[in-house]
Length: 169
Image 1 (cartoon, rainbow, N blue to C red):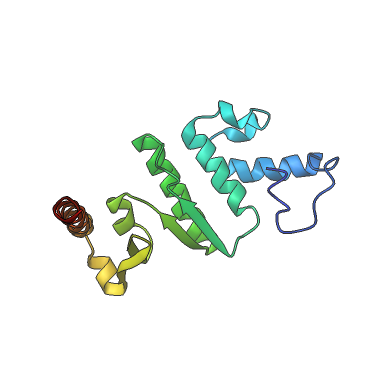
Image 2: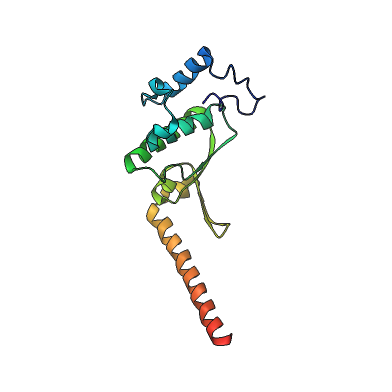
């Protein structure tokens, strides 16, 4: 946490990285998570649960307010309860700090529930862009149906390619 705080500025003097005032400031930020981790600042991060690690990582990423917060499947390896806790914390931090956020997810439910815009990508290209009232009406089933259409097209392409290869090569 002490190393994440001065990100974007001159590298800190590591002798002062964990000064008493710095520790107190970090403890206060960790206390805001509401997880009781402020009393475990000496605990190696690997000894924390997955949800606790993700919460601390999110806190570290936002210590210095970034221009854009990038979240790449940040709940994918968590159990459902921890994932919901981390998502709630994410929503709170994004709102509180007014952060522009790009969240990559394979969860159709998260895609429709969170944020104000959904981009669906396929083979490196944007194939759907939902925003405004269209985004507010969007349902996970609709995204899943379109995703399945794309998969079926890919299967047909692979199947046709295989058939042509067998017939002509």
